Image 1 (tube, rainbow, N blue to C red):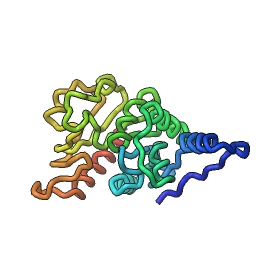
Image 2: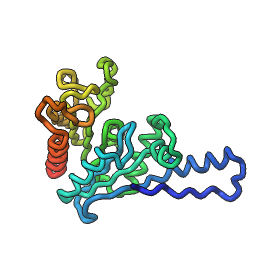
Image 3: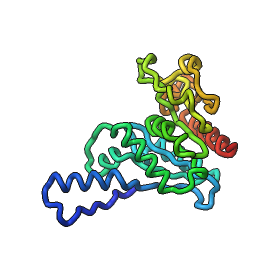
Image 4: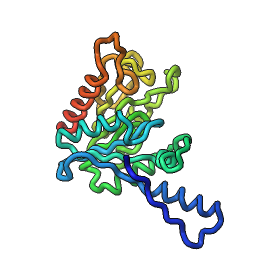
Length: 234
């Protein structure tokens, strides 16, 4: 498991509020990266986690390690709120959108040439990546279960920026995903830069029902294959 980020409180900060502010500022500005795959790879896939699970959840581990085995460098990072959860052992809502987008910008800046980066992630992580992909000038975008709308609220779409997206994009979506099913997504006017691949009977984490005859391992393997093929096409 990734180790926590060390925190150094400024020596003159004696007030508890000053100390807490200093700690939160460090959490916000320092992103610990977790790497898989060869350092010499031509492209690096950068992944952020979903709203509820950390960067080393079983889903993230499987995808990162699977893609890395194909010769791609994979980097994972956590948003500030998830790092605070890890450090404190307490829950907490995701950071506001601007803070999440800045965390993505900071991570891209730390990794270097954006033309050698494909960014994305699970659900929230991929959605936020899609919001800054064009401005960052990255090579590509991979969304692992895009939250097109909240479950049960198909009228509250989160697709306006996807209509004009220029970055080559792969969206992998479970065919039963309550955040966006095929019959809903097919009605959206999305950018031609976006390609969507559906995973049979999968939910938001690509898990199929037992009665489908499909296994979670099969869907994850298919997801890894799609990501690998997409990156080779860039």
